[in-house]
Image (cartoon, rainbow, N blue to C red):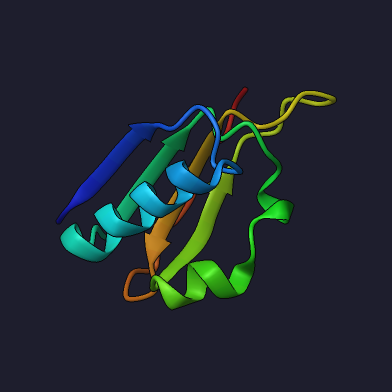
Amino acid sequence: MKCFYWNLRGLANYPTKLAFKKLLVKFKPELCFISEPMMSINNLSPRWLHNLGLKVCAVNNRGSLLPNLWCLYSSQLSPTIINIDD
C-alpha cells in the first residue's frame, strides 16, 4: 500500500495545488494525508478530487479554526474511521 503525507501549508495556492496533483498522478497513493491545508475541505472541488481518483475519508474538526489534517483515500479502498480527535 502506498501512503502519502505532506505538510502543504496552503492547498488554495495554485503552484502548491499543481505540485500536489503531479505527485498524486506520479505515485498514485492509496492513502493521502494532508497537513495544514489552510482551507476548508468544502472549498476544494469534489470533481478535482474525483479526477485524481480520491475521496475524503476524514477531516479533523477544530471548531472555529480551519481543519489542519485531511485524510484522502483511493476510490478502490473502503477505510473505516475508528476515532477522530482534535
